[in-house]
Length: 200
Image (cartoon, rainbow, N blue to C red; front, side, top):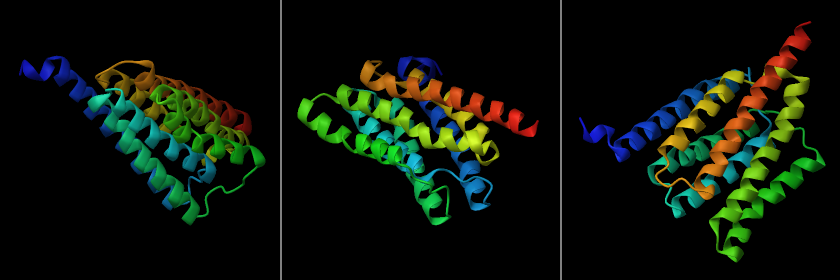
């Protein structure tokens, strides 16, 4: 029992909590897409998927260990949302800035390769991930009922557990979940504010 609550045991517990919350967030989101209740922006989710998977690799390379796994699983599930949104005719309205976000996301791997440091890739991907909110922010402002606030609330809490689970806390491992967690909170605030305004 004592071993469960040693340093590694607690990290494993936090990581398991983050993994559970990842599925708790994504399962209803998938269901909402299949029921045509949620129409995610395709480009946003492709950008988030690519960035999250690369950040997962960067975290592993910097000793993130068991705390990185929820990010990896989230990357795969995010990719699934992007594919499902594309197949189910999600929000496919694409503006020039969406292409800029996608190109920036694609630049992270070459940057990591040429600088030989994972942190540079994580910084770029964190910025891109935050910018990736752009199309969804634009959509949530216009159609707040088509987004799931619950998903992003769970995402914020999940990222808190990810931080607690990281075996090596560094800029490379912690920057992404911290920034995305804060962005989720801000996005939820926007959704609720706009729903109130629209209902009035």
